[in-house]
Length: 193
Image (cartoon, rainbow, N blue to C red; front, side, top):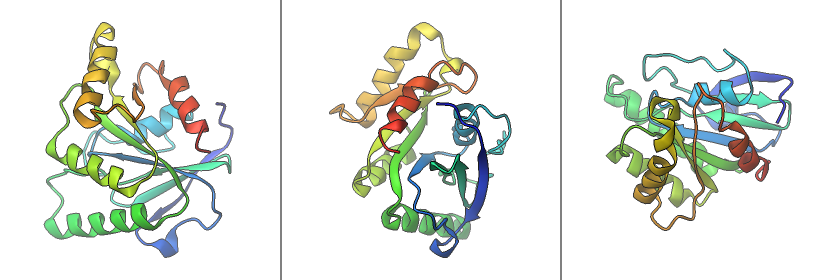
């Protein structure tokens, strides 16, 4: 998919701040530093639309990226970041929950995990949370460039078996560095926009 005019639209922490135009929303969920912002930049072929950081926990609000007035990529704050105070974690958790369970424009959730590691307890909790929302979901095994290319397919299948043993949720490898998996992910996204 060719993206011509993506733009950052708004950071929100409450429904009154969400965009009002009813475009479909593709929501990115994953632990801190799993590569949600890099995913956005790679998919739209831009270097710095979504700000990336090597420091986890940078995203503390829900960020809406308008993609050619066709849909939004919505970047949720990462979970599992220990330097956030308990109060901050609670606040972030509340507005994420409010968004996920009440926002009618959500068309697809993209759940990112790190291909190099077995899913953490936090990953499993968030995955269950996403499943309970009843929304369509795909799993992305991100950072596929960090392992041997010959191991990518098997490792992706193993991650799917752990998170989604019945295998009813599409699971794809992804790499912001290699950019070779973008087309598969775009094909999946197009089903929901």
